[in-house]
Length: 89
Image (cartoon, rainbow, N blue to C red):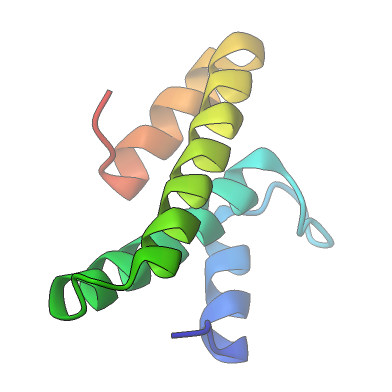
């Protein structure tokens, strides 16, 4: 269920702003989206795993806060990341 190092570097290289960027909101949102997708698939086969469900809700809330921040400060980047990750909003 954890993210592999190769997949993490791939996500970072796809969404970073500069060469050494690993913590921009876009990268964080992409990483959270990947983890949310993994947890969602896990919960479809393990519906009674309430601790993972709580973790999923916390990840979704964190991603929502980052998306709200991005929408307030950089509208064009917000729209871009919504489209690239195929998120609703």
